[in-house]
Image 1 (cartoon, rainbow, N blue to C red):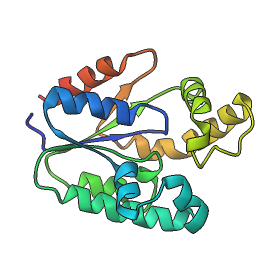
Image 2 (image 1 turned 120 degrees about the vertical axis):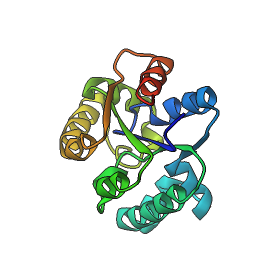
Image 3 (image 1 turned 30 degrees about the horizontal axis):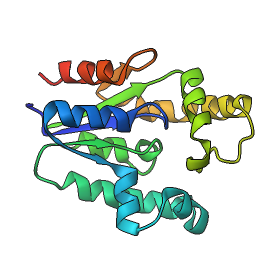
Length: 176
C-alpha cells in the first residue's frame, strides 16, 4: 500500500466501520474507528457523552482524538464519525497531510434510513425519532447539510446495493 493513511467518511450508517474492518484484513493494516477510540479514551459511550456533556463537548473531544490518531507514524485506516468532517476545519486539516487519502462512502437516503432504523437506540442523533418516515426526513435534511463537507473527499464511492467487500475493493483500486 503506497498511501500511509486511508480516511473513511460519510453519513452514519453508510458502512465506514464495516468497510474499515474488511480493508484492515485485506491490507494487513491497523484500523481505528474514531467513535470507538473516543469511547475507550473517555470510558463511556458516545450516547452517554451526548446526553451528559452535550454535542459541543463531544465535538471538541472528537477533534482531539482525530489529531492524536493522525500522529500515529504507521499506516492506518480511520473511520470518522458521521459529523466529524463538518466541524472545525476538519476537511482542510485532513487535506494538509501528505500520504493521506479521503473516501466518501456515498449512500442514498432510503438505504441509510433503513439501516439506521434498525440501530436507532444506539444513535443519539436519531434515537428520539418515532418511525421510518421521520428518520428519512431527518437523514435527508442532515445529509443535505453535510454533503458539502463530504464531497470535499478525494474519492467518492457509491455504496448502494454493493457488498462491503465490493466497496473495499473499489477503495483498494484507488490506492495504486
